[in-house]
Length: 118
Image 1 (cartoon, one colour):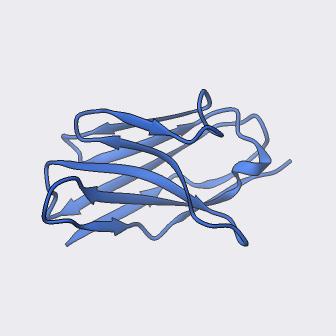
Image 2 (cartoon, helix red, strand yellow):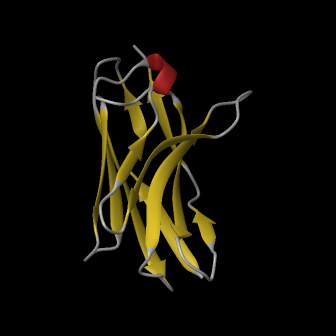
């Protein structure tokens, strides 16, 4: 079992910045990927960014150049630095952990609200 604890959401004005953190604990398989997804009412949950244990990253086109994902493997923590925020970034952001080798496991955090509004 893996527990994911998110922090860092809040309200920010357009053009502002926020940093999300997600700390993982429990049975952490070393070959894994962590990432962030977001959900807005009426839409499907969408990928924001992911990063593997080795540091390979993947971003949604909508956030490239504005968001940066990173991780500290010594702390089992993944971060999402969000700059130049737009109103369309408003959503609940969920942390995700998945193994990349068997046994296949996937876990989600409880979600943290990000609201971009003037």
